[in-house]
Length: 305
Image (cartoon, rainbow, N blue to C red; front, side):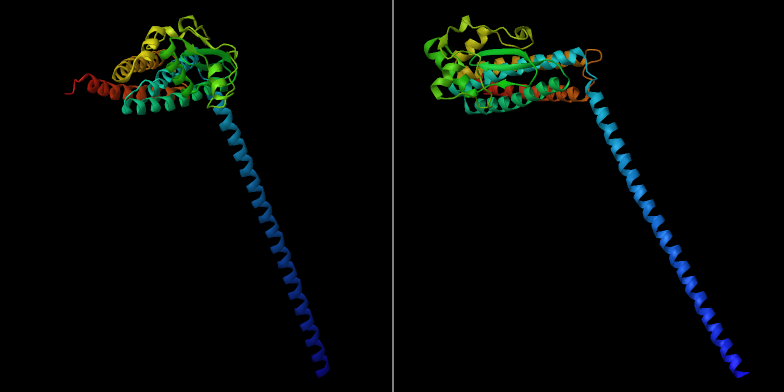
């Protein structure tokens, strides 16, 4: 009897252990399956998020490209015209270093050169990015040449302009960029743009005989100096140059403000974000400098005494 009870106890123990092992294995399978489901769910979520981000990125850039196309012909005309307008300011400002301008005027001209060069590059890039004709600017002494092109290009060296003014003052004739490069052993200007417009055998020419034609007739834009006024400025010295430069640059800046005003008052124009911002910046900067130049001019003519 005791033996039977012992055997039954052993059998019951084995049965309990077997059941426990089965439960453990079953629980482990459930846990493993659940972990796999969680991992797959997380991976799927990450993939979905990345896909959403890619879709949003494509949508963003598509809208950016679409926004670039929201311009009008008056916008294009403004950009093209302002490039030539700014370019003449580079010529005017480059005269200060050789015409004995006062330190305050020299500082002003350096600011103008830096600002106008940067804005010319921005406007050329704006036109390029919208598949418009890009005015390519070559400043050769006192000569402004603007030709149609596809890529942004500014050939300008303030030292070359100053040298041409000095030569004009001394000899009454104009030294072109090609001759200047021969003298200085240069084949590129400070911006690194190859200048091959004129042959090296052209030493100098009479200023009045130069061809001032180009892509646009910039002489009729508001504030632009005539060739006679540029010649007058090139011949001025010292205090006379300061007075004349400030007078003409106020005229020039006022013209730029008028061009901005005409643009924003044109139906449908200046709605595209970048041109709206640039026109606003030009307007503020030019007006600020006009006020500064008026104060400088008042000091020169003695109205503050």
